[in-house]
Length: 71
Image (tube, rainbow, N blue to C red; front, side, top):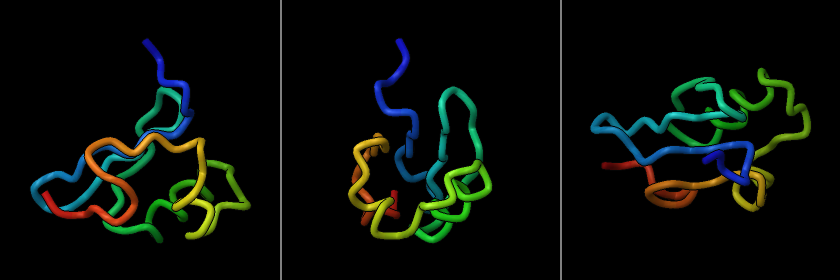
């Protein structure tokens, strides 16, 4: 079953990175919010910034919210 949110941020891996999915495609590994911003900009979301990433209802945070970066 597909998620209602088109952007998924997965739980931190052992090295602290979090996989980022847009729709059904894995688009990168983020090690902080600025990485997510850059990944989303490259994916075509030009208005993404750190504040937007923190509060957007389009993002499904798995394994912790935007401040969780350690396994």
